[in-house]
Image (cartoon, rainbow, N blue to C red; front, side, top):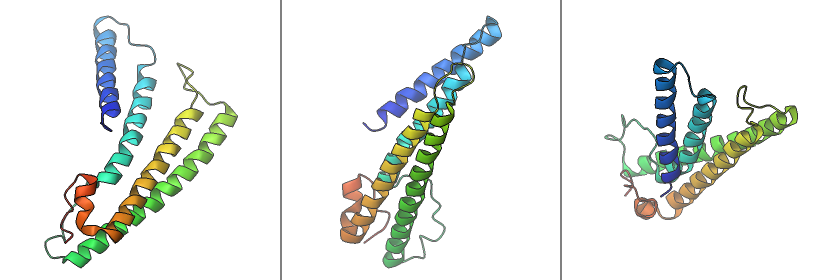
Length: 161
């Protein structure tokens, strides 16, 4: 269910791009503001998916060392990755909020459709904060219930035993 809104946004973006390309190439009439709407939709899709990726631990990863690491090392690896996620998204939330304040103060808007950019930055900040919280909850689960981690987050536990 958490992927529904980003999925719908992705479909809408694809349809908008199709309409823009057809309009531009066949009718010599591109969709006004299509580029801006596409950019904003991609930002929304990305930041809406971050909390889900953090909670379910479904980010892209390379398992070069997983075959030679023992359960304790895998546990430590997951703990460190989640702690880095808390820190990175916490800082990102804070900095995006400050940037939102600055952009709102300047009255920045998109060039063509004049969409205010401040709320976009505040939304990115809030979703970054939610992602940091998701990582913090993962840290708690990794420490307190490592064997039940996969069951509670609906993903395999990636070898923690």
